[in-house]
Length: 274
Image 1: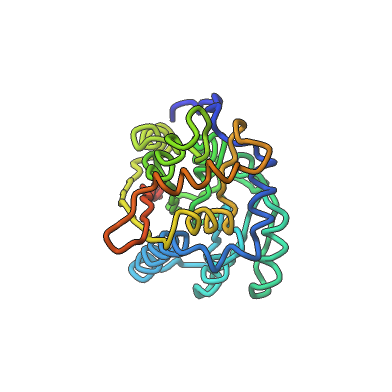
Image 2: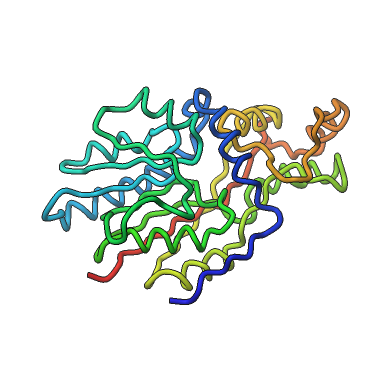
């Protein structure tokens, strides 16, 4: 296995900001998380199909990495014989997840780049739209490989470069020189990290377009899920109303009057050798 790089892109937000913003969004997250539900459901369906073909011979140890509100943690706990651990870096998310999910789930506050779990202790790592927020995705993939048992499955979804390009361009025209949208890894870069770290990974991609009544509705959804802009260059005061109006003018509208946001979705899967 190639050595894992420790170089961190400058545009990745601090971990404290990630934990703060997502923790604050714990109670507004689920109603706004339509993209998250879709992408996680794709992986859950794949996992259930795989287990139907090749059921485990003993209890299934499942790790939900970046478990958030526990939306999928609870569903994973419904798999017969599964013992599930939910891991998140945001204390607010973990408090909420504990309060709304079935008993019997183990919850851990931890950094995905340094998991407090033994080697070869997990059969499935399920991680839905978390890794794009990590400072070093390759380290996360290496940790997943470390904790997985032989024959274990890794299932990761993420967003890639090209996500929210309409919003990015509208802000560029309205407020030149200032970033307002989080950046994402390129497909080539993420694919290389996967192939450097995992044995025979598979990466599937899809371009997803979601509709909104206005650019302000898009911004509200991003805030509700804790995914607002987190870069070091963000303004520390409220965006001036004139800039916000200009962004709305520059955002392209569809023929139906709605606006559309593009998400470059990717699913990384890997089954370790037995």
